[in-house]
Structure formats: C-alpha cells, structure tokens
Figure (tube, rainbow, N blue to C red):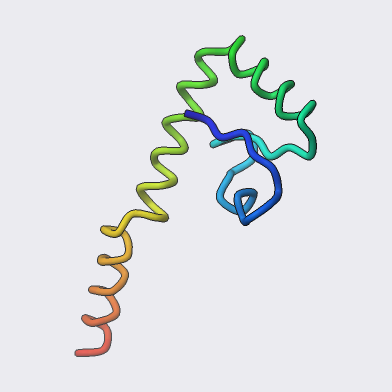
Length: 77
C-alpha cells in the first residue's frame, strides 16, 4: 500500500514522493492525500507495487547479503 507520512523520524527519506507515497506537513494534508488515494484504486495498486519493490531493493536482508558478498569477492581478489 502507499505510505502517507510526515517528516518526523526519517520516514520522509524512505518515501519516494508520488511514487511510493506522499509526505505531508499537516493532518489536513494527510486527509487530502488519503482521500485522493481512496478515489484512485489504480494509483493505490501502482504505488503499492513500487513500495514493495523499493523495500525489496533497499531494505531486505538479502540485499545486504549481496552487498556483503560483493565486498568479500572484491577483497579476496
């Protein structure tokens, strides 16, 4: 699902604006974005898929394992 969040706690750095969700400055802004999403189910699906892919590429342990293995290979050459 798309993310609608504020700028506290680093959440804004994890959201790709208008791709995986929206960052907002106020409760009214959050309500506006949520209403917009509820009226656009295709957008919900597209942003949700983009969010899942972003998590897969950036945050899952398997991504870190690939990086670690690449470093080991590089250091052992």
